[in-house]
Length: 137
Image 1 (tube, rainbow, N blue to C red):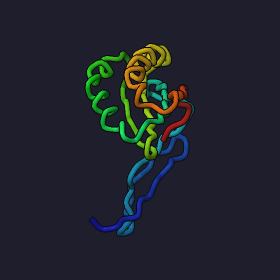
Image 2 (cartoon, helix red, strand yellow; image 1 turned 90 degrees about the vertical axis):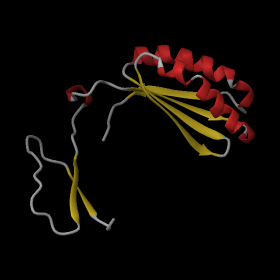
Image 3 (cartoon, rainbow, N blue to C red; image 1 turned 90 degrees about the horizontal axis):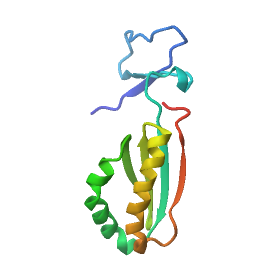
């Protein structure tokens, strides 16, 4: 695939972006929407980010346990995504995306139970940050 330059366009309020005859190698990739979340047509999102420190030798066991409770996690009301990001040897970040604060709070109870079953693998108590999406791209 040849290298292409990507043009990101942010239209002025009330304008529409137009794909005019772009020079070769320039591609109109995406039009960004912007505005306060209250004006967005997308449902509100609420995130819970959990940082976990674990024994590096326990990595495979942790993921095996997570696979065993996959259906239980998938059944959490309002949970639209759950991602695990390995941030270094013996550390990971879990990113849970919910449709509301209420569902995030209920989902946290299930998450605590699941994490509790993995406690023997952890080197410290997991830490959590929670909050609504206030800006997105």
